[in-house]
Length: 226
Image 1 (cartoon, helix red, strand yellow):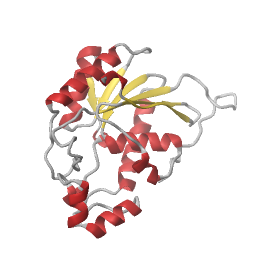
Image 2: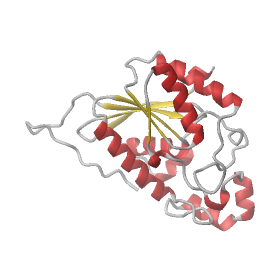
Image 3: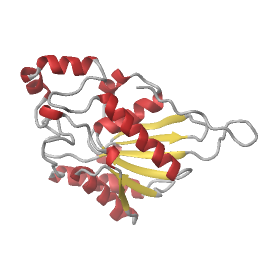
């Protein structure tokens, strides 16, 4: 799916180059499933919370955000437990409330929930091959295609940029939504999702301008975790 936002024009006819809306993107900290690289989405699987290591990562990210200039103006998160806990750690440091946007949830991986990539390939080889080949293919058992996820993530982006124009927003989400926002900002094809590294509790940043342009400022920053 391509990003179809139209450039907005200033009242004098030229592009509007006012202060951008900045998304500071934070992937949630680790859960017990993260080190094992298991599919952990928003479908029929469990809704795991942060592990001890994940809680430490969330706190380190929160401390980095507390020291950030310019400061965070608002926080929005996926509804899933691992993101809520990561967002709450930041909210405690920043003294800000947390709002929830359901469209920031992770992909529904269907029957693959809880499986490793190898296990999914052994049990559902044709379905996995199709999913890797096309953004319109869905995981086994009624999961979400990347095309579907892209549509709802783009809708969330548009709502949030409109509601927070010119402000800095902390967006706490998951691998697929964060990669999707980065991919759309770069104008990269869907296959680029497989070529981004996105670590647990990593920070990325995108600036959205009112003329419709976007720039990726930071990607997969883990310096605060070291």
